[in-house]
Picture 1 (cartoon, rainbow, N blue to C red):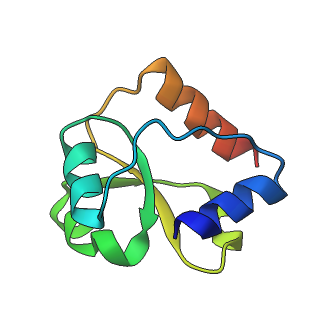
Picture 2: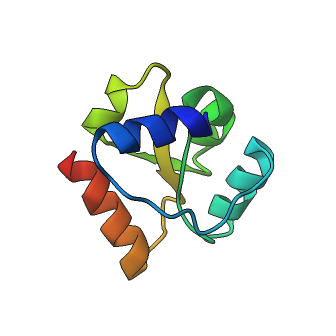
Length: 94
């Protein structure tokens, strides 16, 4: 998944520095649920959390151009910090 996202960002001439890397989907989901940030993740990996309302999708049209289905996720009640807001705005401009 990471290589697909990096390829997409490279094709769009976007330089992006990852702040943290987690080893698996469960770690990513728990970090987002604990409001440690937002994440791009495979839509298949978060179906339960979406249905349960534990996580929400942040709609981004251009992510549909990838070979797989990815979602930008956060907690539903989360207020974004400046870095997260800038990241969302960058992705929305694509």
